[in-house]
Amino acid sequence: MDENREIRRIKSTNYTIFVVVLIVAALFALKLAQSVYWSSFSSEKWLENPERRAGMTADLTEQYELTGMSVPEVEALLGESDYASADSLVYWLGNERTLIDSEWLVLELSGGAVSGVSIETD
Image 1 (cartoon, rainbow, N blue to C red):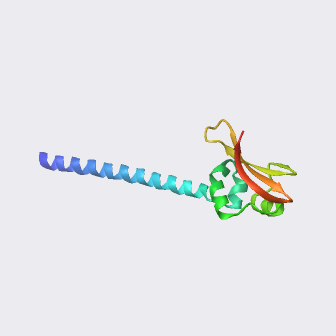
Image 2: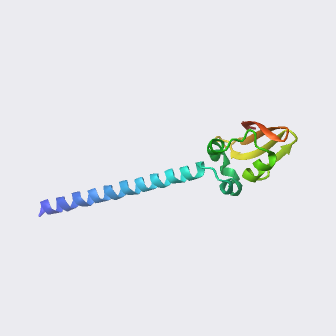
Image 3: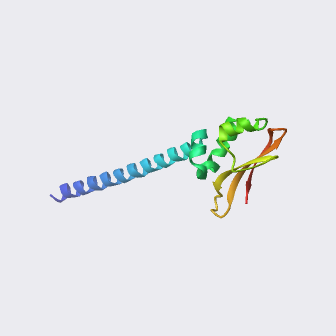
């Protein structure tokens, strides 16, 4: 009798460990999928989630050659800038990773087209 009880206890323990490992793996996969989703650029995500823009900027600059784009082309892609002047368009990217400062996408303009791209913090 004691052997059967011990076997059931071991099986129960193994089942519990398996379920816990499965849950941890599922949570990890979900977090990874979420990270991939938020790091890929789309105009819709950019416009609807300004606080998540920092994660999208690498994909944005890989997908699009911003240098040389006209102001209307940039605005069609990124929407209206948060700050604009005759020589730059500035987009808020969200809080810096330290949560103290903000990050900004700065598009320098020359002759109505983007001549330089940088990411700045304040």
